[in-house]
Length: 386
Length: 127
Image (cartoon, rainbow over all chains, first blue to last red; front, side, top):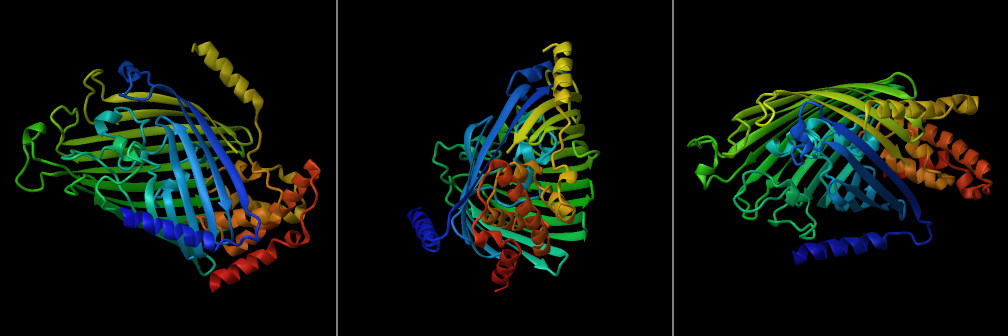
């Protein structure tokens, strides 16, 4: 650990050394806020958290970007939401060239296309696609969240860059090493609360980094059209003994055709779990391949700008989990959820949007309390940015 | 909250608008409208246009740094050519803001931007 601290201290000193003292330091402050009301008329039990967030939720964020020089910049973003205050970003960028940038500190590693748009001001619906959901989904405890909750700020180092290949094709890449997700000893799944907990000063629980990367290509199709195709991967261990591992793969496609945007992503996470206590599982542990589950998630959405003030959206997203579960779980060996969403975003004022959406949930299993396989939920939100 | 209260709230909110997220293009000089179109298209891919338009940046050099940072964002789709157009519009927008605020014009070095800065940036990137 001391070597890691020493490495970052030397790197930080080197960054400061290249700052041009004669140049004015440029600062840019930005922020966003979203107040969302989530109403679940089909499920009265949802009103008792932690089954779902039913009612008002608030997300606030303030971001400061500082350009020390043409090569060195810093970003600091603090959020306040369901978890209280969170350090979403706190990193330095040292840019050797557009094609080679070193990022050190706390940041969301570059995975998937949604990562860039995770701020509520940057997406038109109140909630995130299911594969990236961070707590607004119904029955969230049964599913233990999504495939990869977004954002997922973590401490580490990322090397990234962008390169134009000719005048129409942009290539982006990123490789990174971060602390990774966490859980206690002999885990059955990732502990997302522990993974974001600042109580241990954001220190890794096993000393073995999670590594990953992303490669994406953006093709300009015309003056008002482009398409981006990307692939992402990350993997590592998450328990203190480094016995259990997770690997996440993802692919994404975004197409903008003038005022129409089509987005789709697919993610899958393979997570191994501890099977020492075989009686703690719902199903008999097989002699082979019985110590992991897979969680798949995908979404496809169309966003259409009808006027400069009004966007309408349609989205289909879902998750599919296959593998053993704990004895008390309501999930089966195979469980799925599909969600169908229609929504709109209306600009009340520059920087202030009203978001309305309705969602139909289709579950593969009945809820133990309500007995339902279908749910309906509605969102009404105000989102502002500056 | 009753249905009536929700309805009243919705009517009130709609009565506030609509207000364009971007700019009224009739306000923009005709020779800069194509630059604005590039700005509006490229700079709304990841965030709303209100982000840059509400940033209240009146310094040309700060816009250059800002747009450079955005150009380097993964999948931005902002080429050097796009950057030239975007900065040409933003230079006008910053001057318009300064005029409204009664701020002094920028220093001569900054006023000569943006096209020189883009070229220098590209040279540095090619090395």
